[in-house]
Image (cartoon, rainbow, N blue to C red; front, side, top):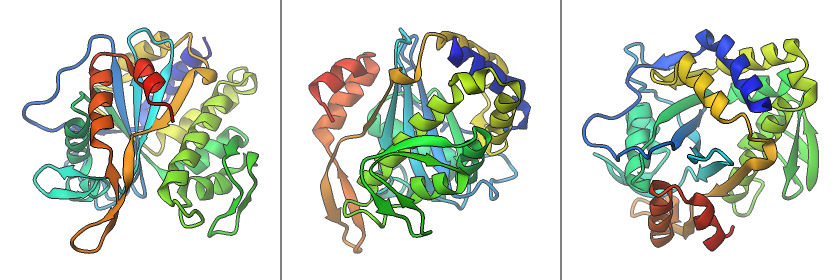
Length: 300
């Protein structure tokens, strides 16, 4: 029930968000799966340059890519990170790091790239500026994240291994840091997953859902930095919230799209190689609505 309360609050202030009128690519696309929702989440460094024509083309970078997969039975929610340096085919541009798609073609090209990579339909897309992460955190009165290791961010914030209670500025440093880690983005995406879980815990906590002022502050902080596809309207959001009424924060399963080490391109770029065989089996699991079975066979 807590999920529907939160989504309902979000819906009441949804008019603050920006609509991406042409979020999806033209031409043939993967078929939808009955009852399944795949929502692509894009964390960008700026929404300020969003094209006034509404085609979703920006000059910013997609620093974070996540796929929120909601199975038909709605018993769990699956949040998969796609590492931004993943070396993939970007339609019309050849092979490159996946975050280049955002700079070259905005949201539509990111959607096409991910759909071709996973051979799976993206039903909705949401883009949020990193500044929104900071304000969301402050609106909740801080969030608790579980860091896999101790580190110091470039901004000077220090994090311990285990639980950390963060304010907005510290949360922003936590999700953006990569240079403090020998494995760079590998730990960074785990930290981003930990942050998303911390936000969900905070948003669905009794201290939030019983506090209308805090709900409104969180909703306002979220929608102020949010852009969504035209199909993710108020009615769709309410229906989605109702379908998730039984989901708790413990039902959120996080993982990372399979990788296969690193490499260097012909022009000297360091990249993350995609584990092609594992991604092919993941694609089949997405299309057959059996991500739980795939994770059981491919534990992370």
